[in-house]
Length: 518
Image 1 (cartoon, rainbow, N blue to C red):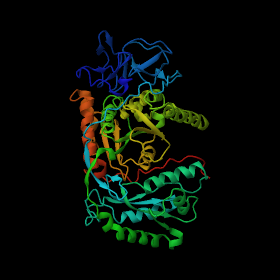
Image 2 (image 1 turned 90 degrees about the horizontal axis):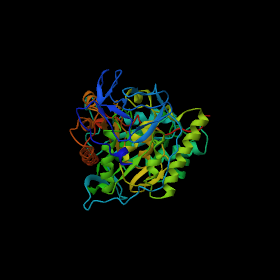
Image 3 (image 1 turned 45 degrees about the horizontal axis):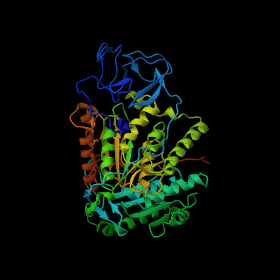
């Protein structure tokens, strides 16, 4: 199982292809490979192979399993000869049995004797923040514009540098978290899910003060949300209809923010152990190198954080599908493993009901980057979680209280997935990308990890870490992981990430919308 999370660091950096496991029948193209290139002894390509794509190094009969990472990623839809390009034209999904083997690979995690530290903001309740924002949550789409106008009065211009909050240097900003639901929805699970998400942000440690803005007649009444989620005393609530209209609500919201700025600014960073970090693990715009460079490097950093007492949250259930049996083997109990399997069964039923396919993911961009099936993407994606035990499984946006590696049920769509993780308490996000996703997730800072050097160089204003160095042999997965871990500590201490410098993070707020729109 180790080959999935810790692939070899760019064996033979000058060779055209990478074989990740002795059982693999394919190589991964290190660069664009021309027809007639010998990629292994006696194996010659018969057509152009794009960078990050797969090349067969042995024959596969129609219907035979194709392996990468030593695991099944699909089945040949036609005979495949050595030297063939292996992709969507000749490989597809298929059914195969999985051995969940509850906990067989679980083992004690060796903890460090002297945990690392970072400079955090300790709240009165003992929780530790990595940022210090004032938040505006909205109960319904109808109050979104009002919330945005309040936040706009305090917004820093990332192009000019103009900052209305310059006199309050310890306040990182005012964030309006708007969405497109809150009414025209059924009570029950859809409403409960929305309220749990909003409440997770309302009580997030990175907010010093929070306003809740409603219209007044929506299904998601602020009063009901505050009672259900026990938010009394945490929020200043305003209904536009009761306030006398949009202008008066904006004026009242601005006045409230101004009234708490001095109090919000009255914080200082102090040295705290890394155990106070909860990191959301995300990947988006993946490519054929994601599972070789950035994801396993982030996995190495995740292992380090867990060994230092912190927490990492793996999510994106549809992008774990097909590889969940490798996580159940690391579960601390059959009950924890069964929670994960039950989630996968829910997704199977959900897709069947909606006429969708689990293999609709990878996206077109993922496929252009070399990923062929969801099995292949899942195997690479789960490498972000490293090698430690799976200690708990959570529903979307549930508060994460366990220490160590946990899983949260979310869709694969990055903004929705990250929103659930941050609602659960993540105070830092690490996001790997091969195609070049631009992303933020206020109030949690987001670190972007590039899987390959060309994209990193092309998008250096958006990428924080180049993991393409693993591909070129400049560093090992473990060395890249150490570098990421050290950056986690610096960003948690206040160093701004690239996405923060460009003020990403408010528009990406996207609660999971399920159920009928009425």
